[in-house]
Structure formats: C-alpha cells, structure tokens
Length: 371
Length: 106
Image 1: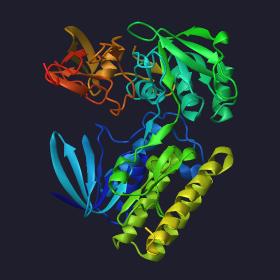
Image 2: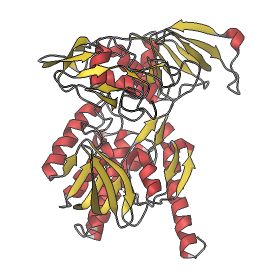
Image 3: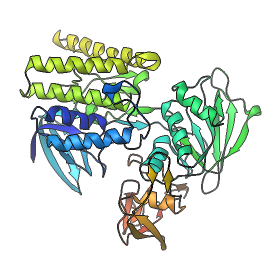
Image 4: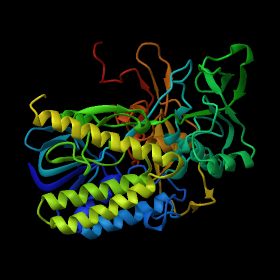
C-alpha cells in the first residue's frame, strides 16, 4: 500500500501542472500515467500555442511539455509511468496496476486528469488499416517521426483536423482532401487559410460515404449532404488515398469520476458527458477533475485547471493559507477567462458555468434532503 | 516512411537501432520507439486479423486506448504495439483472432 498526500491520475498537461502547483507549496504528489512517457498529448502538439504571454503563447506544445517535466522534477513529484489507475474506491483508495502487479494507493486528495478520447465515425470500410484518428497520425509524425501514409483525407475541420492536416504536410504527406459535413469550417480561419493557400481542397457540406480497399484503405467515396446531413449519392465522387483521419471531436474520459460516484451531465460544447464540479473543480469531498475530463478544451486551459486543482488541494491540506490561496485562485481564474474568450472560447466559458450551476443546484437539493 | 528532415523538429540523427522480427522479416527499429512506429516505417499496416471474419486491422488511436493494433509479441498475444517499446530481438507476429493463448475455446 502506498500513502500519499496527493494522487494525480494522468500525466498530461493538467496532471503535470497540478503536481507542480501543489508541489510548490510542499505537497508530496504522486502522478500515475499508463503511458511509457509523460506529457500526455503535449509532445505531439508542435504548433505554437495561442493566448497571451502568460499562457506561453507562441511557444510550441512540445517545448511546453519539456518545461513542465523540468518543473515536475524540481518540485520532487513522483511520476509513476506504465501505471494504470483501474479503480477508485471508498476512503480515497485508488487501485493501480503496474508491471502486472496491483497495489492500493491511499491519498488524502485525488485529482483526476485523465483527458479525453477521440471520437470515431462508422461507415463501410472505416475499420480498414490506414483509417485512424487524427491524433494517431499526429503522434506518429511528430513524436515517432514516421509517416502513416502519403495521401491523406482528413475528416473534420475543427482545430485538430486543420492543424493535423498542416502538420501532415510539414511531415511530407499530401493532404488530398479535407471533408467537413457542416457548411462552415469548425476551427480557426487562420489554420484553414494555411491549408487553402497550400492548395488543399476543403469540401464543406460533404461526408465520406465509404472507404474502400482490400487489405488497406485505397480511397474514399465522398458525397455532398443537404441541410439535414443526408447525402446526395447521385453526386458522389471518389478520391484515392492511403490514409483517412478522423478529427471529429473528443469525449472526456470520465470512468473514474463515475466510479467515484460523481454526478454527470451532458454538455455537447465540452465533449459530452462530464462530472459536475464546483468552482474549484471539486467533484467530491476529496476529488477534483481537471483538464479535458472536466470538459474538452485546449492544453493551455488544461494546464490552468491543473494549477487550480493543485492550489486548492494544497489549501485543503493546510499547506497554503486561505488568503494566499485565494490570491492564486483569482490569478488562475483571470487567465482562464482570457483563454475562454473570443469566438470559440465564449461558448466554453458559458458551458463551464453551466457545470458549476448544476453542481450547486445538486448540492442544494442534497442539503434540502431531496436527494 | 521515416521523417528524416522536418521543418520544425529538424533532422533525425544519432539514432540507435535495434533489430526486431515481424512474421520472420528482419526490421531495423529505433531504440525508444513503439513497435507500431517501427512497423509503419517498414510499410507494414496490417497488425492483426479479426476473430470471426479475419478482417485486417491496424493502427487506429496510436495512444493505447483502442486496442486495435494488438499483436503477438515474444509469444504473448494482445500486446498494444503503439505503446510497447521495441527491444532488441523482439519476435512479433500478426495476431490471428484472439492470438495463440488468448482464445476462449479451441
């Protein structure tokens, strides 16, 4: 059995930022991550981040990842890799398994920073080798330095689809089509325009009907859709490719939150089902959710949420006074609201407030004995 | 195909190689990379065949979540090749169905 003040599940941007924030106040944190390397999905994000200077805007994600790892080491947090948290039980007990051996961790505070999973699409041929998530392609080109294919069709024009398309081109692939069911591009125009300038065709109002190929994908049938997203097969056409990528959103990984009996809600703008949390990211008495598990946003937001949870955990553990902690929290919240401004950010800001509102309403009902 | 030169990440150099074997074929892998990266670099895209219909499957999520890229590694079936790093002399096999010792029945 392992005893710790703070257990952080997930060593991505939120989890590492939480370990650093809490560690600065002397909290002894353990970070567990099922992957062989820490950093979550930061190291594949080799583009410059948005935001202002305090969010490290203009710095590439992989560089931010390296900086986080240095800081984690500085504060002395213990990072356990190849270690999966498989369950969360009463009395703050978390089951972990590493090298085929399971163990109990008893933590005074727990931060869930488990991230999100990429969404899939199902159509004929969508299981063929060569059809993969955009994140997979991004991991292979930017982390492992291997091209998964040479002629790529990207499905989805959110920022992940747009940025990954451009990065595939930087890596030497040809992006032969970007296909989007909606009538507009989902992500920032600045990313879409980069693709347009490079001559990549973006098919708005189109979907992939099927992928074909015997042992691997050789092409896709694409058709325009009407306003109800019904395809017009009489106008379908074929594009040859060896890779199809799905960039069709992400879903928070909330299994551990559900196991901890957090109440959940459905908020489409943040990726779907989410645990309710208060304004300090608490989903239960001693449990926090930070990063994509608490609503799919960006790595910059995930890091700020991680810091928030880390600071609150340090306060709860008596390592930081209420006054000093509140000053920190206010600064973090200011930075968060800057990240949640603008065309896309505002929707997320409203959605995040909705989570807190529902949490407070639930708490009210519990206190009134209604639940 | 390996990305030897990259406009942002620079040149790939000073790589230490290890030898692995996939279905008997010798493959030069780079120390520290996952099996799936070495196989994709060698042009291998089918990692397993499904249980009932024998359909091909390959890399899908690339980060250990989906289990589509599982293969037999050193005799152990159902190994997630996208998060299992290469080791010198590794014997990798295309997994047929549930794998040699992973079957539910004969």
